[in-house]
Image (tube, rainbow, N blue to C red; front, top):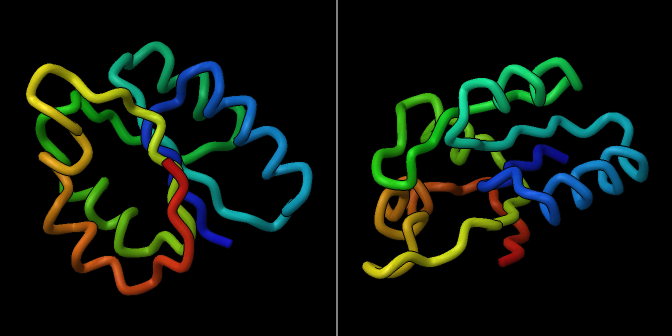
Length: 102
């Protein structure tokens, strides 16, 4: 399993812990807007990508391309879904995805 979790808030972090316990060999990556939180998450063994909700970095697009499972845990804003706005092309091209949870 190669899991990407977009938005490492309270609920997503709890889901990550449960998934890692159930699938110890899984690769787990996540996003956050906060560099300090990114450092903390990385210390726990996660691959962390900074995502401001507006622009998907090439590294985040690559993580989407590699992901087999995706959890979207970023709330919509006034303009709509920031994940769809910023990552639409990468999501369309994500050939390895077998499951998406929103």
